[in-house]
Image (cartoon, helix red, strand yellow):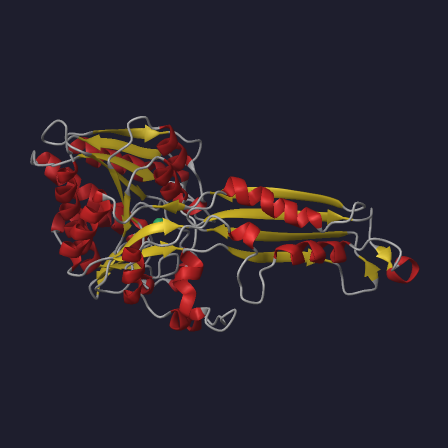
Length: 437
Ligand SMILES: [Zn+2]
C-alpha cells in the first residue's frame, strides 16, 4: 500500500463520523465531509458541502488533463456505524491500529477504506496533471441511516456522468472481485386492522363480532407465497431474466445450500437452495415481517397489525406492485373492519453488463485483482444505485470487503491488500474510462 494512501486513511479513520446511535456525532460528520473537500481542493479541484438538513454531502470535481474527457462520478460514504460497546474492541474504534496486515477501526472497511482509494488516486493524478477523465466526487454522510439526500442530489443533478463508480460492497472471496449489476426494490405495507373500540369478552361476544386477528390473517393469506416460496403472479410479474453473461459468472459464487446453511436457515422447498441467486436476485419475494395481535386470555382482539414486504426484481415497478399488493390485502377484509395500509417503496436497479462502460470496468477490475469479476445481484435495496440507474448512468459497483472484516461489528478491519487492490482498481478504472469518449 502506498504510504500516502495509508496515512490518509488513518487520518480519516480518526474522525468519529458516526451517523446514528448513542455515539452519533454531528460535528465529526461535518469534519469528515470537510476533510474530503480539502483533499479535492488541495489537488487543484473544486469542492464544497451540500447541506441536507442532516449530515452534508461532500461534492467536488477534479478536471481531466484534456477537455472533452468522459466524466466519472465517484460515490461513497464518510459516515460510519455506531461502534457499540467499547470493551468489545481490542483497540479503540477511532484510534486506527495496523496489525496482522489489517487496519482496525470503525469505518475501515465500510466505507472509508472503500471510497478513499478512488479519491486518493484521482487527486494524485490531478496534481500530476495526468487525470485522464473528469472525476466528480459525491461522498454521503447519511448512508448508514438510510437517508436519501445523495439519491435526490443525483436525481436533480443536471450534468450527470458517463459512468459512476461505487466501492462499498463485497468481494466474492479473497481473489475474486464482484460487480453488482442489480439490486432489488421493495414495497413495504404497514397494515392496521380495527374491528371494535376495545377488546371484547370471547364468551359474551365470540362468534357474533369481528375478530381483528381473523381479519388480519385472512388478509395476509391472500399475499403469502405458496409452499414453493414463489409469490403469486400479480406480485411477481415484470421481472426481467438475467443476461447469459451474468448467469455464467454465478458459478464462481458459493453454493446456495452452503450460504443458507451458514446462517442457520432452512430452504423453503426442495431445490430452493440451489436457486438462491435466481430467487434473491432475479425474482420477487414476499415476506410477512411482523404480526402483532391479541393477548393470551379469552378476548376477541379489537386491533391487529402486520408488516409485509415485497422485494421487487429488476424490471418490476413499485408503482405497479404497490397497488396490486394493497388490492389483494383489502380483497379479504370484510366491510365492517377498518383497514389502513401505509405503503413505502423503493425501485429496483439494474445495469446491463454488456454496456461498454461496464465491460471496461470488468476488464479494469480483472487487471487490478487478477481474476474476472462475478456479476452479482444484491437481494436488498441500494437507493443510490436506483437513482443512478434511473438516470441511465452505468455504474461499476464493487469493493474489496470480505465478510470477515466485521463491518458494522466490533473490531471492524480492512485488509491492507484490499486497500492496495482498491488503489490499483481506481487507477485501472480511470485509465479504462478515458476510452469512453
Ligand atoms: Zn457502506
